Length: 424
Ligand code: PSV
Ligand code: MN
Image (cartoon, rainbow, N blue to C red; front, side):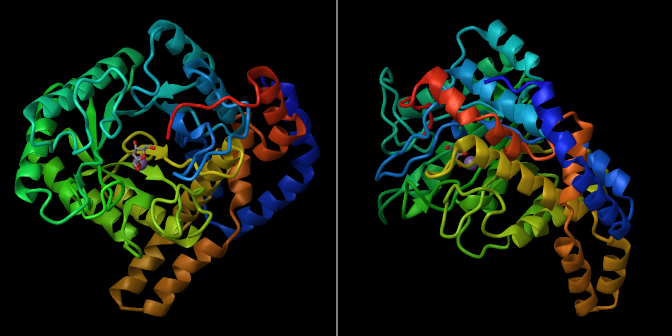
C-alpha cells in the first residue's frame, strides 16, 4: 500500500485549524518551543524488522493478516511508517531472520523510502535447520569450544552483512544462562563469553560499535550470563572503547530504577543504545508508554540531562530502537503508537526547566524538584510532536491516515490473510 503525499495533505488540511489552536496554547506554556520542535524533527527511531508481524506467545500466535513475507515487504512497511510519522527513518535487522541476498537492491529500496540501516542483531538463541551445533545449553558460554566458535562465526557474518548495508553497530543479545542451580560454573561461563565477545570485537570495523544487551531472565530461569547492567558494563569495559551497554526497558527485574541506570551508564560513557517497549510483569513486549509513561519520561529526562552534560548529539550518538511485538494489535498501528509515546517523552524531557531543577536540588527543595518534573510531564505537548511531523511532510495524525486509507485491508488484499512474518 502506497500512501501518497496527497493522502497525507488532505487529512492534514482537515485537522489543521484544531492543531494550530492546540499548538499556540502549548507555545504559551513552554519555553523555546521552536528549539524543541527542531529536535523532534531531527530525532529518528529505528524500527525492528521483527515487529512488523503480530507477536506470539508459547500458547499461540494470531496474525493480523497482510504481514510482510520478505525483507522487501518489511522495508516497504517501515517506509510507510516513516512516511506517516517522519520519525521512523531507520531499520534494525535480525540475522538470519532477515538475511539479505540482493544487497544492492535492498539498499536501493531502503534509500527510496528514506531509510538507513541501524544496528544489526545476531541470533544465537535459536537453532537454525542447517546448523551443525545446538545452542540448547548456550552459545558463547558453552562448555564446547566448537559451539562457541560457531556463535562467534555467526556474529562475524552478521557484521559482514551489516557492513554491506551501511550499518555501524552490532547488538549481541545472548540467551545464555542456566535453568537450575549447579548446571553452570558462573565464572567459566563468564570467561567463555568474554573470550567470544573479544573475538567478535576484534572483527569490528574501526567505525563500528558493539552493544551488549542484558536481560534478567527468560529463556533461562535461574541465571543469565549477561543478566543485568552491571554484567553488561563489565563485559563492555573489558572489551574496550567500541563496546557499550544496551538497555532494553523490558529486561529488568520489577521496579528497577532504569532512569538511574541510564544516568550512570551515560556518565561512564558506556550507554550505547535502547530497545523501547513497556511492560507490566516482565519482557511483555507492550507498546512503549502504554503502562508507565511517567517512567519513560523520567528515563528521557536523564538521557537529555546526561547527553547535554557531555555535549552529545541526541540523534546520532545513541542507538534508538523499538523492540516490541505483542499479540493483539495491528503491528503497524502499534509501532506508530510506540514512536508517538517516545517522541512525547523526549519532548517532555526537553521542556524540563533544568536551571530551576538544579537550584531546587542544591537547596534540597524536594517539593519544588518534584513540581518541576511533574509540570513537564503533565503539560500536554502532543501538539509539538504533531507540528514536528507536519514540518517533516508527515501526518498530523498518522493513525487517522492509516485507517482512513484502509492500509491493513490493502495489505491483506495484496499479501494474503495468512502471511506470517519472520521473528518470534
Ligand atoms: C530478547 O528478549 C530481545 O530483547 C533481544 O533484543 C532480541 O534480539 C529480541 O528480543 C528478539 O525479539
Ligand atoms: Mn531487545
